[in-house]
Image 1 (cartoon, rainbow, N blue to C red):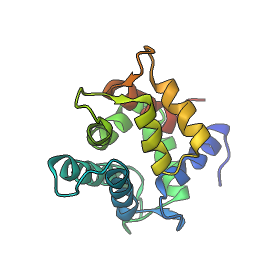
Image 2 (tube, rainbow, N blue to C red; image 1 turned 180 degrees about the vertical axis):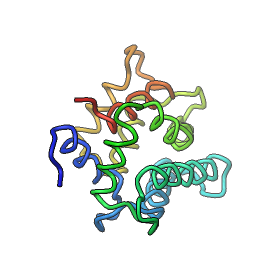
Image 3 (tube, helix red, strand yellow; image 1 turned 120 degrees about the horizontal axis):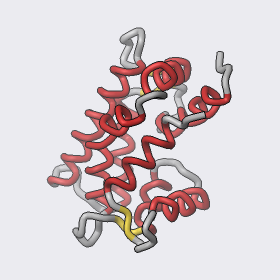
Image 4 (cartoon, one colour; image 1 turned 120 degrees about the vertical axis):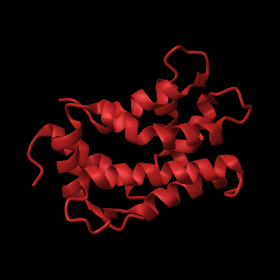
Length: 170
């Protein structure tokens, strides 16, 4: 049962990972996210960037499963997700950032259409939308990621914000 405001917020984040909406998070959700990003940005799965994204997705899945899959069935239920976040990540958002970093690094490389190490706000919004964030919210979130207002979003901006979003302090 979700009891605190913190737990309610974390439970609401579950859907962002459950890409296929089947009620649990599994390896396929991470693979689907990678596939969707590659398709959106016209990147071949067998390219270096495509392979890095799939490797990052697998590392992210393994990290999440290690934190939250308490029964070892290779699926994370909403309850396991909330409990994992509350018990293992709440006081250490950097741990979540470390787990997510390989995927986010590779996703940024895919969205970095000019190869300068950063994505435009527009491309970040495209990436968020393809991962299931509603268009208006994706645009607002992408703009908020541009901390310095230069129209570009780098890895540290993405990783820090991503970890904060999924480990929301009370």
